[in-house]
Image (tube, rainbow, N blue to C red; front, side, top):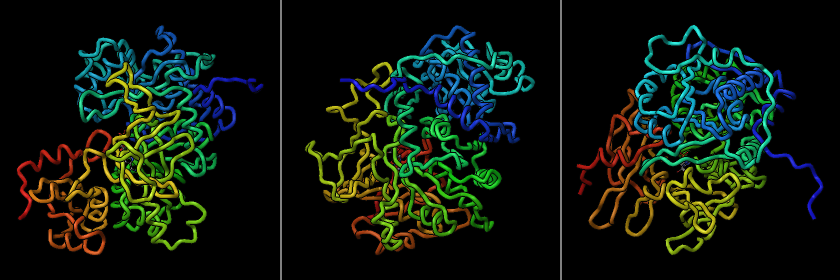
Length: 541
Ligand code: AMP
């Protein structure tokens, strides 16, 4: 017997309709590429998203055709999130930090038909346009009078001219909720990039889950600053969750330096911000010497890479801001776990709470996890035994776009490539990417743990730990360190700093000071490149 409730497909258009009708006056504030601040409301987003949808119809785009963006976090990008997907096309957000050859490859693989870009990326467009035959319309996200003349880019129009003359009314189409809504290519550190293809259903379920109090805790009373880019995994789904709750959104545009982000947080009374650790590192580095405080910021979600304890401490103890450590990946839309304390933890001393907060957190309803040992068997949830982390759920990838890479699942589970332990309360802690695990004397050393201790030293800005071949122990950890500007620390001082903070055999054998640690397109440390940089390095004997 079937239930007798209404059956409505879960479609992204319903989010923007809801935000307009029930939270029409909630603000959307953006720092523009031009440097000024733009502000309007969800009502404006909805109106202009419908105009964008009409523009796509006018071009004769079919359902599921791809519309690409190369853009910062901003209001026009937000309109495309709803206008493109809402009208049944697929929004393909491209990461502008990728190499132009990779961008051209991706645009061809996705068969993008339209590419909308911020003017910052005009040189990129000029570099790739001759190699992208499927793109028939380039749209510069700018006013008509800012459109560059003689750019050499064919079929180029300004966004404002493109949508300007279009009707502000539009009948969003109804279709299968499993239809594709957006796509994001993984960074492709090995082989060609592969695309996760999200659906309307997976996006809405993820948006619901992400908004829950034990997850990102989003509400209509929030002013949210997603520093996490809209070109990478849909800014962790925040645009959708914000529409679902009617929250105010604040976009940083291209200005992601510590000073600009701090000023925006203060000016717009941001209560909640989300980003990767490197962004927050820049902001804290700006705040401390200037004795700055937050007047409204209450919590920040930090993920994408392990959040060092020193950062959690600084936010909480120095600034009274709660840090929610999150873990996920492109293939998971992206949220998998988020770290909030349970009731029974509230009585614990701060240091004990900190040990929990450091973990990547508990599974969100909708995501199931398991950890598996080398023999393929599940390992216990004892908070110690590491294993390969597998996930499944309705917003986890089943297959990559065009079947690239074959069937990624193992018995219905997606192998994340991360190594983790899970404690009896279900808190998961990542110890490494499986390819970065350091094996020393038959034991595993967590590079994240070694790095966390280094960055707790006041003179250390960034640290990356890699395993180096060792004749006796197989591998030994070495820590590459970038010092803070003007700060000093010696190799011996740093190694001494490890004493008492970790087991003796987990202390690195050596410290290598470097000017910078190579970062990938999504801000993660590129250990492959670091290993290349240090290929002539020899462990001290
Ligand atoms: P991406 O698909 O580019 O977003 O990268 C996903 C990967 O980033 C994960 O598989 C993890 O290796 C890493 N990652 C994401 N969040 C965290 C976190 N909180 N701690 C440690 N690693 C993380």
